[in-house]
Image 1 (tube, chains in turn purple, red):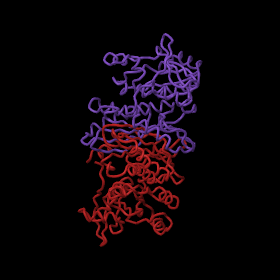
Image 2 (cartoon, one colour; image 1 turned 120 degrees about the vertical axis):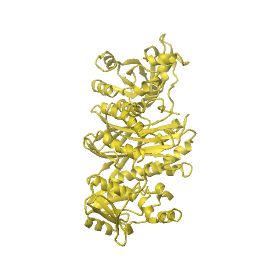
Image 3 (cartoon, helix red, strand yellow; image 1 turned 60 degrees about the horizontal axis):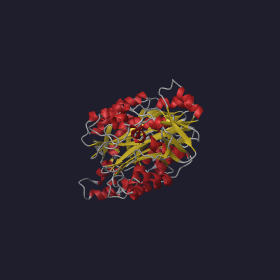
Image 4 (spheres, chains in turn brown, blue; image 1 turned 180 degrees about the vertical axis):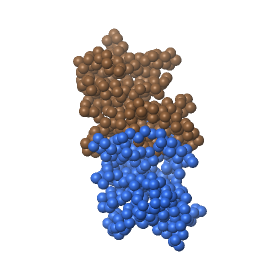
Length: 305
Length: 305
């Protein structure tokens, strides 16, 4: 197990959860309640060489991504993004114009989603670029979407084709904020999260949180063009890319079968949903082949190293 | 001018301030208002080699400092700290035990100040340790203490001896949260901030924000033992250390002369305050020697490089 997995497990047990906080570490965002507030908070730290490669992509795209991954976490909880604070450590010698371009990428996306960038901390140091974004949002009257409330019998939906994100989607995706709010306002969703570490790994987390299991219909998993393209030079099939590649930033949702059917036939949702399987009582993850063969699916994906 | 100064100046002008946000970049913390909320938010990014030196101090003290500097920002605004999210990038090869010690330092101080650590993001990368803390607090019925509301004629107070923090105080200080709340509840303070970059530099910022000036009574500036100790090996006088060293994490306050006098004679404040000068209409910073000589004081301190 990686340092990060071990550490997060330890921390989750260690941290005292106080009563104005409902959920915490390990989720897309924390929910802060009480005092007439109903907020979600999320934070992501992006490091050169891990989440982007400085020099290979423009500063503006890096900045954009730093904000977009947090917006995706807010979308995962079907909340309305409100504001963010952003801290940066610039490598010494970083040019002002580059710093400005980084922020133009951030601010352009912030404008599109009406997020106020209200503060931050700026440092220089003798190491690569780091960007930390903390964002909060307002929960609607429908309440926050959670990953621990999937119900046996639910259909499992994803909001777009998966895999191959590394080719460009991880930098250029549009966070599913509007789609999530629209879906939440129209339909009784049982559970949800955003896909950051690969469908099989993220689904395994959702079912573990909800103390249920899932069957994935392999021929129903939507495969992106980039997954097919990547497959030509990798040793993996397009389906493997769709199941295990990280940073899709699509939504993973569950809903009762009749609700799922209505979602699937709704032509007015800003996106098309794909029904990829069902929630079952038996814990764990199972794949169903087109021929109907049922085998245990080992969750794989982007493990934080 | 350093990249950071230039960048922050540019950003302050560039960022759109939306109406649910009263203040932003460059202050100790942002104030979020509206929707029945009245919160302050602060964030600090701590980098190995800048804010601490990994290997020279324990992981627990580093973690403690990461939380403490944010608590000091909340204290600067006389708000009640509530919760924090914390992100870390560990250097590859970092041991789990070290990661745990870092968090034990964080969590021990969090417990002391009843701060819930409710989330975060954990990464590993091929570069030094980085810790990002974002903390929020609740404003009391007295409202947030601000740095842009000093009034001509105010006395200038500091809450403890200054200088020489680098010897150990910058790691082990107790954030002035309780003291700030107590002072704020008893007295009509006009303005305040915490001392992070040196008295002369921070005071110059306070007076610039308030569009006033200040006279510092040099023989009234409280000098720490560490400033005297450091002076023995540096080329600076103890007073120079007290005026220009960073990371004192004491409070800098202004109040009307009668209020300041009552604060100075209050024996029940958890600390002793020092009256170091007065707010004047003429912009800029001036020093008054014991002999009464008045000269312009060049603000110096920790400039973010």
